[in-house]
Image 1 (cartoon, rainbow, N blue to C red):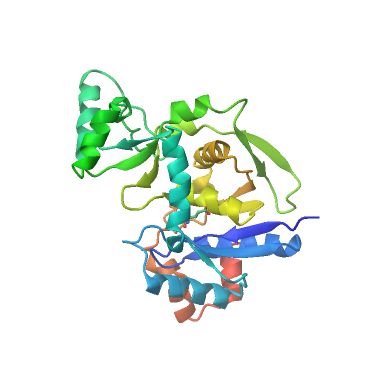
Image 2: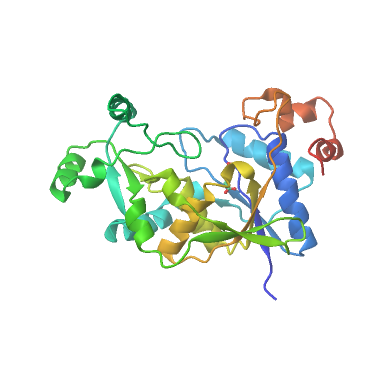
Length: 291
Ligand code: GLU
């Protein structure tokens, strides 16, 4: 039987909080029950916001919680050339295009659409979809702008991409800790519009790096927060385009703050380091997150 493989994949752009503790401990618990592997992956492609101090904090907090993982840890920032090779395939297949509009231009376009009585569609996070203008630019015009050093991002042409998919696009969600009960969820990547797949200076995005790495590391079970549920649709589409076999998913409940909202990395009092400094024990952390 092949080993089940789990991973916890934090971004070192802030301190870990109770929500991360829940996710990490749940991965640990499921991996242990399945006698499987537990990987830690550092998702540090955003080189402006990720810092060595936050990364060191992740190792410190997770060790304190009692987590053990396989070495070496994969740090995404060390693998840009691998993501670039995958991006080049998408470029060659004309599934991505350079998108040049600035935030201000997008806002102006949407305001204009509003004046014409058009309620511009938004993605599941409430962000307006990217306007279709750049998708229609000629190859000559794209080249001209790139040569002029215009800033741009590579965006997925979601309609072209969906046209490549034969049959229904879905994923398997397992619904409890036994990993046996499952149901099929329809993937709806179109609800995100033409998402960013890479930047001019960084040849990947969260979505691209996550699907490449989950496949490369033979992750069989992705256990992560409910906040990434809808995003799984985009990741399923990328997996189809790249011929990667998908893991199963379990999107767990979120740990909410006292105000009933999702915890953020700036909420100091739910930070694991602050709780530890205040004398909280790892056992109490488990209890606090309901494990
Ligand atoms: N790096 C992502 C985060 O910290 C998690 C990605 C994932 O689990 O797929 O939110």
